Length: 81
Image (cartoon, rainbow, N blue to C red; front, side):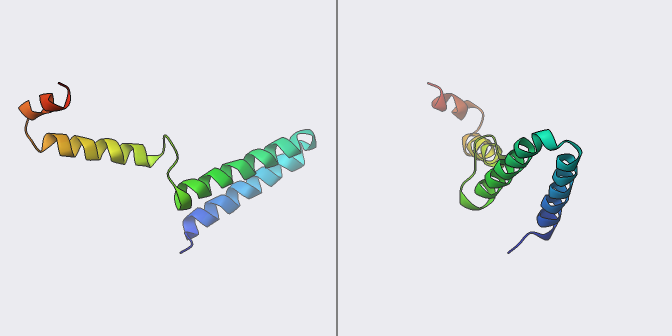
């Protein structure tokens, strides 16, 4: 399902990018390339696999903390010894 707020935000950023491209035509190719690469990584992160330093890192750390904390305070030393 298409995320309408996300699609609206991408469209807004595209309009801002086009505005910047019209104001400084010498760096048009660089700005547009950066926009395309950013959108590509955004789609990869959302639909294919989570990229490093994305939300998945925080979920993994929280899951490990939850698993380790189930055994109590003294059980934490079992993971480090």
